[in-house]
Image (spheres, rainbow, N blue to C red):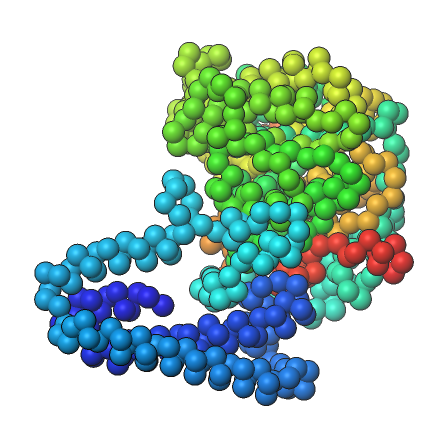
Length: 611
């Protein structure tokens, strides 16, 4: 709003002796006032500040929406109020103009206008960025300060959130084309068949797409009390010894896997940490156009993730991360989901190494995590999310390095040295954790946030970039489930699987994955994945079969193999191709509808128990 006025300082006569400036301010003020008057009704209906939902409704059917507004709200009274406020603003602006004219009738010379322009340009750039701190600019998550959703929403700016949604709409339009790729009812029916197991019962099906009551299968001999998620940066399955790729990169993880349950056909939902975080903790898919969901207005919605399921049951929580939580809007997103304690780079006690780009080393993060877990109240259960970062470019590691550098892999040497260091720090954490009283009562879940590119590009979607290990550790887990699971799966399956093991009793959730340990014996598993960024290629794998849908052109089908040698065999006549492609379209379309309509979370407890 201020930018045209500031740029006008460079013009010989400004904006036409103030007339254009006054007109611009009156018009923009009228728009802001109109949005301010309209927003309380929008919030009452959708429980969110103005966002892309308002744009989407007007796009869908302007006549119907206009009729609904006219007949459902006191439009005339609101318009009169708007007219009065605009008139009052105009009167104040005219009076201010008259009062300031006496200070000078002539427009200042250029040598005076130039420094004023520079000062004003700096101020509006500062205002647009919202902060002078290092790192990311101000985002909606910075307004989220409490566990009250209404209080957090109140701290936002509706005009800003709507403008952000409008500016981001173009890049989302390609993704939104999935909304009409299949009739909504047909897509919903297919998606439910994909996600529901014999142990699931739909809850409130007219309101929520995949909300269901889940009854876990076999319980662990000793029911765990606590849950710890460990998300490992760039922990590629192609260099994990426990998965059959023993290059000496992950000896400590391999030792842990001997006592746990490892999933050897497991994939990340994207190729960036951002998608790994919300898919793992919030169990929602990586959708075309919404790859950076935690930063988008739609990221303010509630999801049926780990905090939503465990916080109402009295669990304490903590999120420990090497870096700054304003990166990727992590703190805002996860605080909105219900997490309360965030321990980042500025909270680390006596770190041995700090990288100026990202933060402290993995060993510092794990050391701090041990301190935080030991501080948990003994009388309450807890869940924790620990996220590593050292295995990320520029691979700044402590000196001297506690592990030997990796050689023999060319350009990957530095990356794999960082992975070996992360593995060492992980093993060191478990060495100390085993000595703690809470260890025997804790279920651990270890997963890579994503892999990275290698020479062998497996299929058109480069499947090896998604291949990561997933390991569950708990007393007696091998006695019930064995040592290895071949079911195909993704990060969206983690929350329902972990929570089923943790609770050992029925619970209601709306995750877009399944409890992998309660599937029928003949279920090969499935997953929907896509690369990060603007690449709208989406793939659906079922067991060892995969269908890849590029944004343009025909779908590609075939079989993939991870062991002993990764390979992909195209199969144009694959019998399952049509059915898998239809499931892919249905799943993405239904998830997109749920996201845009804000139907991704859990209902009030009373509604869920008494549908």
